[in-house]
Structures are given as structure tokens and as C-alpha cells.
Length: 52
Length: 299
Image 1: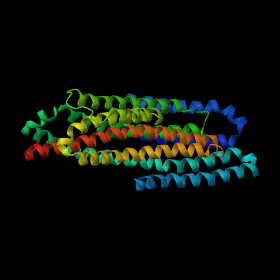
Image 2 (image 1 turned 90 degrees about the horizontal axis):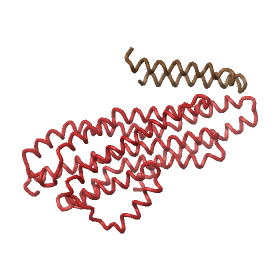
Image 3 (image 1 turned 180 degrees about the vertical axis):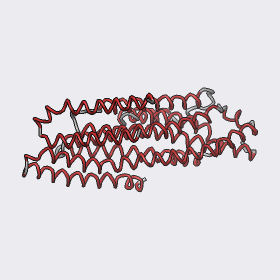
Image 4 (image 1 turned 30 degrees about the horizontal axis):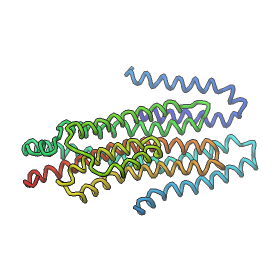
């Protein structure tokens, strides 16, 4: 579980740096892609819980 | 008492000075180079957030260490206590004690250490991440974790009360004219855990008033102060975070004030977990005293 949380911190940190680098307008456009990345990461937690 | 307040207040006071310096630097940077506003916000949140976590994580670590020690102590002392009480016989009739409380106290402490503390740390981290990237919020998850923990804590404390009062052997003996206004005041003005604190006061009051003739009033007061000191430590830390949030709201970044507020809220939940451990310490000490009295033939 701690590995998963550490990975989440890295992911959100990268999203934060990317958001600051892109600027407000581009961030608006890229945010769905970033949310998709978080969604895929959350799916990883679900597969981890089921033991697969 | 003042030593405790000074020891608790020192790290948040240093944190507040650091927040003032960082906020001043960020405001100056925003004024001089407004085109780097996003980067300034990111650096401010990362540096101030990392500093803000320090005293909070210290409080969680203290809690974790305390639970570890208590688990070890329980594993060592409870078989001896249970065997001694069964052999002595009189101890059970002495306080109308329910032996299931042994299992319950130990279970509550193990649950506290294994599940509650890690979930609380996850709640801290999710609050921080929500502030770092507001477009991807985890606020509902961390709120859900807090509500779940508070529910569990209230169930455990209700069970403690049930164990103590089911037999009806103990009675609240201090004047209710004095205690009721204090309880009402605490319940209204201490957020989240106020009602737990008043429940604790009532349960501990019931038990200690019944035990005062056996263990001695001064000993009971000393045990209460010892077991409730960590609770006071965490409660003070939580209030200091709320104070920092309130004081830096006018000038600091709004996410920063929100982060401090969230940390304060989570620490109030930690205070609830601390109460369960305080209960466990108190019961163990009281049971040991009762057993020694029975063995010595003075019970």
C-alpha cells in the first residue's frame, strides 16, 4: 500500500510540474489526459486489492 | 503544564515564522516576475507543505510508538493479569469486571496501530495532493477516511462505556452541577472530539469514583493525568494548526491556509484515536492495582 501511495505522490507531483510548465490555457486542454493517467493508476489499486 | 505547552507550541511557532518568510518571498516574486506565478505557487506549496507536515507527522509517530509499546506491554501483562484474576477469584466479584474487556482493550489498540494510524497518514497525503493539483481532488476520499475513523472510534468508546456501566457497579459521584456545564462547553467548542472527551470524562469519572476507595484518589488522578497527557499534546497541536491557518489566511496563498486547516482536522481525529489508547493505559494500570491489592489481601 505504501508503494502505491508513493507512486501516487510521484504521479501528482509530475502532473503539478507539468501543469506549471504548460501554463493556464494549455493546462485546461491537457487536464483530461492527466485525469486519465490518475484513473489508470486508481485501476491499478483495484487490481492490487483483488490480488490479480 | 507550562512545560507541556511550551514543548508543543515550539515546532508550530517555528513553522509559522517559516510560513511568513516563504509567503513574503512568494508575494515579492509574484510582484517582480508575475509571468512565473504558477512556478512560484508550486515552489511555495512544495516547500511550505513539506515543512507543515513535520509537527503533524511527529504527532503521528509519537502515537505509533506509544501504540507499539502498549501492544508489547499488553501481550506481556494480560495473560498474567487474566491468570491472576482467575486464581484470585475475588477480583471479579470485587469490581463486577467483565473478562471480555481484556480481549477488547488489546484488540482496540491493535486496530488503532495497524489500521487507524496508516489511514490517517494517507488522509494527510491526500489532503496535500488535493491542494497541490486542485484540478484532481482527493478531498472526498480523505473526508471519507476521517468520517470512517471517527465512526470506528465512537463505536469503540461506546463499547468501553458499555463494559464499565453494564454491571451498574459504578456511579458518577462528583457533583453534576459542576460537571454538566463543563461538559456542555467542551461538547460545543472542541470540534469533532468534544463529545468524545465528555464521554471519556463521564466513563472515567464513573470508574474512578468507584475505585477511589480501593486505589486511592491521588493515584487515580496521577494515572488520569499520565494517560491523558498524549491526548492533550495532540489536541494542542491540532489547535495550533487551526491557529496558523487562521493567522496566515490574510496574506498566505489560500491553498496553504486550507492545507493547515485540513491538517488540524485530521489531528482532531488522531486525538480521538489517542483517547482509545489512553483508555487502554488507564484500564491496564487500574487492573494491575486491583490484582496487587487482591494478592496482598487488602481488597
